[in-house]
Length: 464
Ligand SMILES: Cc1ncc(COP(=O)(O)O)c(C=O)c1O
Image (cartoon, rainbow, N blue to C red; front, side):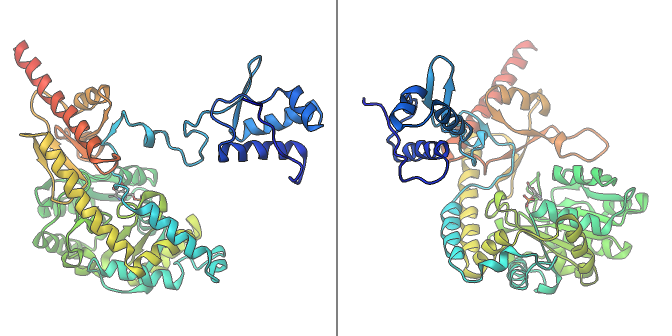
């Protein structure tokens, strides 16, 4: 093979930059291949009519950009494409040997294609410049209009003036707690809850108090007792596809909980991030509908679109909107308008609802694989959910089970991660099956868990 030689005559700027650019272009167009050796400094300097120092700087720049690796005594080689040079590379995404059921990610679907298409359209829009400016802390008017429609499609009151756009639901939670709580206050929540609220609340100096649940979610009598006992005026909860248990709270229970909140003047922070999984979200009844003046309704795109888009919102009670908006201004000034624009267009043209439809079907497909491969196990899961709650048989403890699963490259989380009560957490684990790249990966991971459960029981009984 004749040695590769860069063409730099037509390139502008310093010569060492021109050489580094030429190396990058040659890798892109395939004229330089993975692991191919570049000419020596001296040879290249001679052929290009530049100094050896210029070539050294050029190769140094190419190393810095991640195009090549230089090894003393061996020369300079084109770096193999392990994905690590790609700024979007995230190692766990590309490791097919790990079966990750620990995080509640949605499956990918067509979001990348949709994003590509929308970015191209937005790029040509004459109004693009407006997205680059500071905006009102509440969010741009047309964005709030779109989010109000989205919220209303989940049966909340339709009111764009009550919307504050946020950078995701974790941020919406932060805004709500900033608006409502002071250090030392008590936050009530379901006794098994989303870990993000636990850490956020403790960071803000709040006491977290878990309220007992049954198969319909929060138990009203226990909630009332906790309010009386702690004096709490704040409740965070997830009536739809509760994380981690996947429970959807029945209407009657919602009414009972709302009645108690109303009686004691308790604010409800209602996290509806999984509500879209319902076959008809407009038929659900959020607390925001039953008790609009005391409910902060939160929703966002992380589960129905993608976590990377970082878009969410708070639908706040009328007289709290300004406070939430102020918290937005001092924490983040405003939600990133570019991302919000993408999601807003998807609400307006229906793309987001198509994505939700797809997720509902995909969640069923994945759920079936879970049940098929863990036959006879005690798995609680509402239909069409990406997460399930599995009770373990004796003699397993959930911590030990997660540890042993990890040895088999399967990642899951034990009940203790979600527990906020004062007793011992249930002997259970959460299985999240949205993150794996495909159904085969879900199947293999679940098979490994099934085998693990069986093997240990067998070993245990043979010792007995
Ligand atoms: C119940 C719940 N709320 C909020 C979040 C975080 O959402 P976001 O990524 O929009 O901040 C999660 C993420 O797992 C979640 O499960």
